Image (cartoon, rainbow, N blue to C red):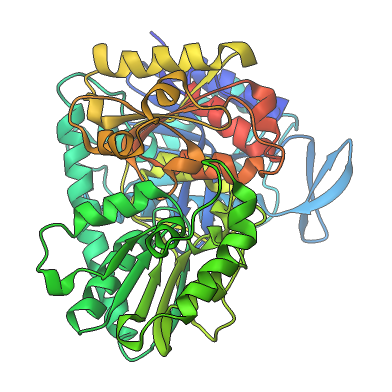
Length: 546
């Protein structure tokens, strides 16, 4: 029997990787595990990717860094010669760093209780005949040259048995635990609810710690919190609104999407009335409250110009005792420049302001407005919501630093298909989650990137009933990515059925993928993913699908 492999269909960066993979796959034992392209985030070295990782349950782990072309040592440097020229490389430093990061990654997992990992590193030069050491850092015994490949598995076996390594093999059946932290586990009926609930409890504990940030900012009347998806911005916005309300402020809580404001209402439904904001709703709903309404049901131009101007006039006529003394705005990146004067006109001159934003989720490219105010900045970098596999998949789409803290979920799945079949395949995937794989219907949402799903078209004629369905206990929820921003479900089926011309595909894909807490399934033609302009995204999806 052959070794276990992950992924089953690896996407190799070059021929050198495949040569080493094939050699190890033939030589490893059936109890061993061979992994390719393992990615995780390290607090010291940032994003780390291991070319190959071997797990031997009775001996430990081996990290293998692979360099193709001809490798030589001279003048104190290791040089790699390929078709693109000759370059100085540092494979020993890179492999040693990856080993340390791998050990830290497991040791820092909340549920890893097996202690320090026994691990070694090696470098593989599969296109170079190696006869001796290549400098002081590359002793012969840490190199897999071209002539070593037939016995590569045996060399790793012997290196791991070296008593000089020092660290012991983790006790018990440690390999499944390591795999769960690195790539998740395949979901099985009967396990889904317990796993999702356990991780959600962990996330809630992490989020509660963020309340300390608001205590630090309690004497700052106007501030702006930025952070990528999953960093707890909405939770912090709710808590800030509650604190200001409890202190006697007349608070207006606003967000762009109705789904978020409905979620906020439900989150605060059981609070004492003195802790609930005076107003919770969208910018449009605030206009309706004052009597500002478009001539027709679909008049976006009204809300770009005439509507905000009318609201500003109405707000200027409010009595002093009805003006807001504090504003909390979630999804602030989606507010137009023209909205801020109208909103702030409804407040007192010294009104407090707390904004929460993620500009990389600004799918409405014309709405990255900011109020003309001095705001103290606060940056969140820890993702508390999305499983590690989901964060690692959407990471190429963002520029912000983000540390994954929510723990492992399930492997990301990718279903490539033709453009005309996206909705059909997405429906099949959502149905399989419920009917075959043990997920509850309320665990699942199906999101589209452009045109609405037919079920959404049917349901959202009654907006109030449509959003009430989001919290229903017996159905899958259907929405566009834009409509679901700021919300989440345990499992997301993302149907990539195109992009509107005025939206950035990177932001749409990022916003959609980051709605998933535990499991993400992406259904898309490869050419639609390519519109994100980053080859790493497609490679990561394909690897996850393996």
